[in-house]
Length: 224
Image (tube, rainbow, N blue to C red; front, side, top):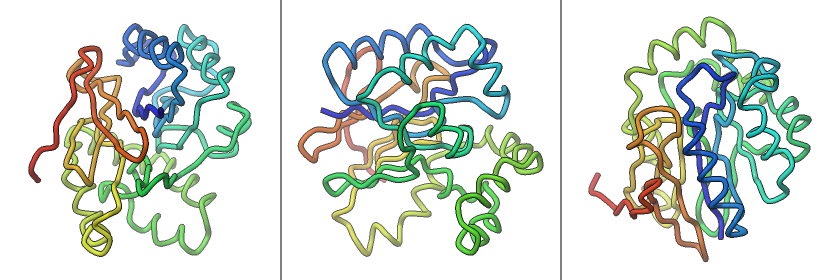
């Protein structure tokens, strides 16, 4: 059984990260022997530095992830760069995974609020350019302004052509902070806004289902 969770934004202790809820969630995941997939933005390295997080009150949560072998990590746009993440967590860090007909990715590169020029240059220069440009102060300011208008619709629109050409492919994404189940598109919400955004994906035998936390109520498929 795999559990997919995203957008925790673990910070230095002064942000909106819901520490108590996430600790209870980790206890449930690890206690049941599930594999945990962190689908991006586990850390909040825009508002805080990595050093501040590792020396703050949430450092124990980071250590839990470092020490647990059954955690797979996908990078989000608020995480440090890939090299830093791999060194910190002592494992490969992914930008996308494909498992049993499901593509799992954070979703920041689907977001038109991010700089499309960065995307085009990334094709030419590779991920190191994306890390540098997407984490520039100018882009951080632009994305901070856009954060208040965060929605699933732009991500869905970015995937429509791929969905039409390959309708069997399911997309498990994050980034918007808003849980949503469209069947072919499932967003796992976040752990740093209001309680009703806390959700996770349960993935077993090629089937993905979205649940709320802590009620463990399934969030059924809705119409587009």
